[in-house]
Image (cartoon, rainbow, N blue to C red):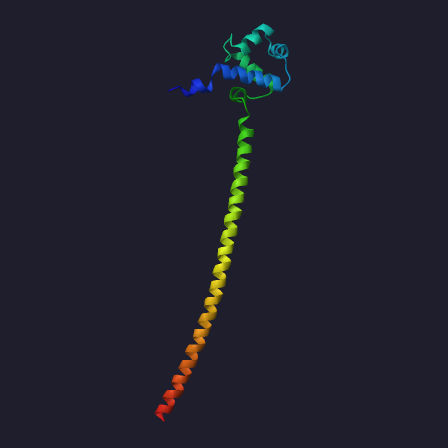
Length: 145
C-alpha cells in the first residue's frame, strides 16, 4: 500500500504541474528562470527531474506565476473547483427540491379536495340526523298524545 504523501507529492506530477502552469501563463523556461533568479539550465533541471523539485525555487515559481503553492502542487485551483462542484450540487439539489415540492403541493391539493368532500358528506349526515331527530320528536309527541 502506497503512502498518501508519496502519492500527493510525486515528483513527476509536481514537475508536470510546474510545466503546465508555466505554459498557461505564457512563460518560457528562460523567462521563469530569470524571474526566480536561477539559470535556464537550473530551471530545466527542475522540469526534467534532475533536481529535487521541492526546494525554494518551487515556491518562488508559484509566487512569480501568481498562484498559491497548493495550486502548483495540486495542479488546479481547489477553491474554483470546489465552487464549481458546489454550484452543480446546488443546481441539482434545487431541481430535486422543486420536483419534490411540486409533488407535495399536488398531494396537498388532493388532500384538500378530500377534506372538502368529507365536509360535504358530514353536512349531509348532519342534515339527515337533524331530520331524523325531528321526526322522532314528532313521533314521540304523537305517541304521548
